[in-house]
Image (cartoon, rainbow over all chains, first blue to last red; front, side):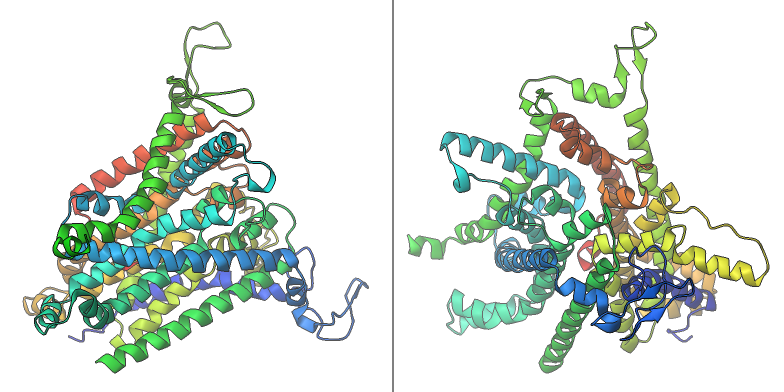
Length: 298
Length: 307
């Protein structure tokens, strides 16, 4: 029996599911070249570089950017630039902190015994088993109560008053990212033999050298995939950000959501297309790097 | 002191786990306790919380009221219970459809040639990396009256000479269901794939040697061994569906109100955090009960990390 044999039914179902997964994305990209401003229907592509007369006699002006009109429009949009900057700042900062403390916790939980271990391990499952909105409103309540108290108690005025912003978003992102980093690194640590570390210790290496030269290189792929997971979670997050952001800390998902409730032009599609391309390229590069890395080690 | 630390394994472990534990305690556990306290409070006229102990919010949520229009002493308004029920049934339906779609694809990938598997998996992940909000927006463009689906159906109907009026699909419960299924499909495919891939090929050979046909092999070998993946996937799908409010907000218009929308509105429009907190605690308890019974029956697999 050929182990790779699949029935026609399975193949047909797979094609159907892939179509389901990709159809919306293809439509999204197609509409980013839409000549229609309202973006309700697809009214053909934007004319390349010359004006065009429509069937009903109206004139469609060529854009200096040609078919990429909406992309130029996007590039000139300061709100988008600010939101993109915020999103990346939050994602990078939160990923670095979450990866460091998450890896430390994974080492502790896998290699050491200590009093609060069951509590630490259990708390990791909170973001998985509790709906995000429950955490979101809880964190909002915490910040608003704490800030209200602190502003009052220290009679803070003007700019010194504590309020929701980039810091609160970052701090909250770290809270739901850490468990994922820890669980991924823990799974990696479970897989490998403690005897390598014992051998290093026997050969006279101290704890730090053992960690640096033996443990860390071995868990590095796990740490990297944990970090990548955390980073994408942060980029994608809507709910927690929605409840913890303040003036000036709008991220891209929040910005897009705001647009969806008001006017939508193909600019949103252009933004989505750029987003997809950037993330796709980044992940592809990382995959190539990782597969090269694993080839070197084997 | 440094010497003592070097010798005490327990102190080292505590120190390593401390940042994460404190972070999670302050930002996840304290907020939950605060939510509980606030849910017993009262709303002040300007939308602040007055801390007392009253069960008013929970009673309001249950629909029981003594302030009845036609002179009765007690009456029952199923508004909020209905919202909870609708969210539950949507979450069950979404999970069902997601499993139906995810299982064949996961099976397809797991039985693909090892060299092609990574590419197929990568193709599942790409949609996941486009933003959650952007994916909902894409469905808005597909489902609306002038959208792509109606254009394609109209075109086919035109070829067949059947008269066709564009369907109203956006702002219906069906649109919300499709959006939810689309959003969470990859979270089911990955864990099912992980558990299918672990199945040793020799098991299939043994089943074939013992005379089992393809259907029997699937039912007696493949399906039971892939259950941990299905369970992990269900947890990753069911819980977020229960609490999501964007999909229903955008694809359901104002027609489909779920618990998520109810909670969000209490915090933003209605400015009644005490009632919102009570609703979110009920939501949490419901998801925990469902998860508990579900995992007690099938176990809590390590596949959950795989996604």
